[in-house]
Length: 202
Image 1 (cartoon, rainbow, N blue to C red):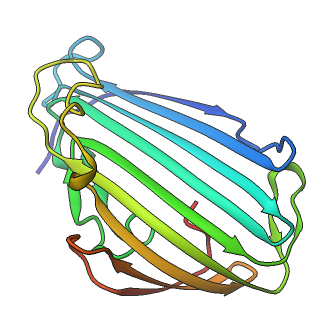
Image 2 (image 1 turned 90 degrees about the vertical axis):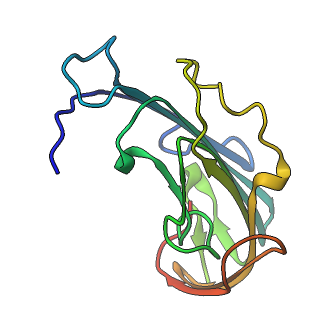
């Protein structure tokens, strides 16, 4: 299939290089894709897509590190299927099938506590020397919410904790090579998954 589609994209990044203030590092990313009638004409789909991400790292002590990623996204109007938000898999909900959950509204968080030998934390760079362990908790929600408003916040009013999918897991690694085991929490869809990865989740 072919579609006729043009859009304008914008991206804002705060603290892109991850400069550190004491033991805390925070980054903020915001993206917008505008493809509605106000910006483009003669498109087969008229929509706007917004996504924000907050990355936060806290060094609790020399060998303990807390990482938290918060994400939110919203699509207004009617977008093609491949523009939908998709959760599931190694980069998001690690005990769910790849891109199993899709929707036009999305909320997600990933929390990790890492226990290891962090010998350098200068300018946001984290170097790991030797063996380390991690505990993580992934939770997220996405769904197709019918609304006619151009307000990207519209559609989140009725979301509550029971709508979220929850995964927990553990990991062990050396340097940037890590083995992870993730499993769904009760009443969440998914399966126990084993991942071997060479890059961090975030």
